[in-house]
Length: 421
Ligand code: ATP
Ligand code: MG
Image 1 (cartoon, helix red, strand yellow):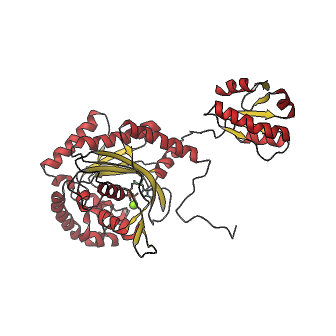
Image 2 (cartoon, protein in one colour):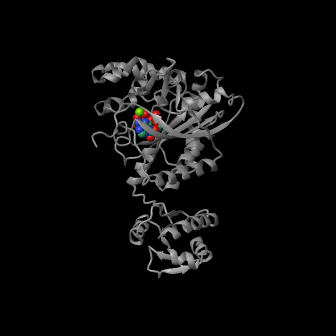
Image 3 (cartoon, helix red, strand yellow):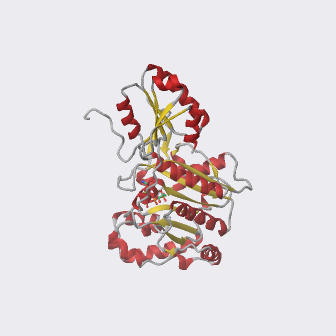
């Protein structure tokens, strides 16, 4: 093995045994999104570095230390997207989709962050992103939470995730809070770790988001932003929580929940599980009205969320998910030259008649015994057997691999009606 090339650390293959689970989950998500009238948008994986610096912000983990940034042959600085919100907004501005219009969009794909790989944290990972534009009122914030809740219901994990909610108010309200927060932390500067000291004047809210257990008490006793909200922000938040209550969606108020970035305003939320250790957030989002102007558009409204697909699949696994998708229904055994030739014709005939049938045809010859072993291993329910005798008599032998039923000899019409069941 010494000479073989391995995948890059933190970037994983999804092997054929795992892809059925992914496809199943993806299908559920797509159906729910369609049921709420959301449209897919497909975006480039590489964008100008400037886009992320301007949107995510210079003083964030992502921009400070997690981006895969490189110069292309033209010396332009490009970055593998670390998230999708910026690119989605860039595309909508570029194509003029935001003039007096309302949009409900989703995208799905690989994101890249140079992080320390561990369970639920990778350097290449997949997000489902959902973004809405042009809607100011809290109904759309509620709709996004309901939509994500429906995902969990579909996947049977609604009891394994908790909704945490907070409001970040407006930029002005945050400015007042920011000063109070800096003053609070400055009373005990010795308790701040190195990251937090650096952030104290640049982005003190982000300190609340620390993952350092040594700072837990300090952060818990900090003033709460929710106490600094003005009337309008409060009313928006109350509309949201009353909608959720009316629909029986439980939530926990978490005053420490900050998305740390300047462009967030009002609603922020996370769906969190206790089943995955410290990588417990499977879905996170909020309102980011300010970002559109920040990227050169006219003042407008935006709310969205992003979901970590690997964490979602890990959670399903932890909950004992047993969705098994059978890769093959029937395996066609072909013994001898004559059968090999006739087998191709038969296989195509079956596929014409039964578009849903998953039929695998044996290739490469070999004895009946060795082919039969392969049929069994394929997971198929039926072994279809074609030898010279069957070809001459225009029949097919059928062996039932998962039941005790007797072997049968059928015409192709009879075979089609059997497989159709
Ligand atoms: P965390 O606090 O766990 O680092 P984050 O705040 O950086 O998360 P977001 O940028 O909000 O995460 O991304 C939304 C979701 O994408 C996360 O809740 C998580 O499920 C997933 N995610 C983020 N980073 C990774 C990663 N490196 N590997 C796998 N999933 C990730
Ligand atoms: Mg992170």
